[in-house]
Length: 290
Ligand SMILES: Nc1ncnc2c1ncn2[C@@H]1O[C@H](COP(=O)(O)OP(=O)(O)OP(=O)(O)O)[C@@H](O)[C@H]1O
Image (cartoon, rainbow, N blue to C red; front, side):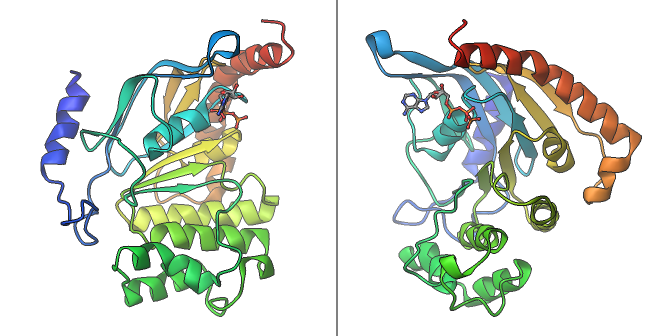
């Protein structure tokens, strides 16, 4: 067992559950370590077998903001879905707070590029759906989330009545209503226009700086990866592994102006160089040349 894993088990000792096995509302903050250990995920069988991720190791500290960069098809979403508990690893394991992930849990909230709001429910109904299912609605919290996400006045709107940016704010509010320890974000802003994306990045940084949450954020955008992260993990082309980990030593709190600094540019260059060869390999794979 690795040193990191031992640390994570100590965190797990402090973890409490309610009678029905779900993390209780008040006890859910403060933890959120993730240990990915020798994770391999193979899809299909025989001639259709595809090794998406091969022996990946990564430790994420509680309250850390980690972004993941990698070429298309290198297994980023696969890794995230193993942490979320949507997928089972073929080999290896994912530990959260020292315990193996055995399925989805509200303490691990997921946001995708396309929001998963219920189209037939209002924004208010969507946001309170998770807590309602667990009999854990906190009216003050729901109310303050609407303020924090700039959704006041849109409580009774339906998702299709909102812009793409507003829908992603509602999606974030829906996620935060569950007070997750860990936020798993799979290219959440990639479908947004540049200005909305920048506002959402600032919004997310504010949310993260205010609360004690671990964030794993997948992106193809090198600038976004550095702007948000404590550490940028660069993955290899498929089968995915960790190629490089870049410590982002930029001051916090951060806003989008930081992208004009020399240090930002240095980090951006390093990340771009690191991903360049992998992107080429991924392109050859896609063209069937490897
Ligand atoms: N359910 C599945 N069945 C078979 N192959 C799959 C399945 N899901 C993903 N794959 C394949 O596994 C590989 C990794 O996919 P994954 O979506 O994890 O990559 P990614 O890095 O998130 O890609 P992208 O950046 O394009 O979103 C890809 O080649 C993909 O086609």
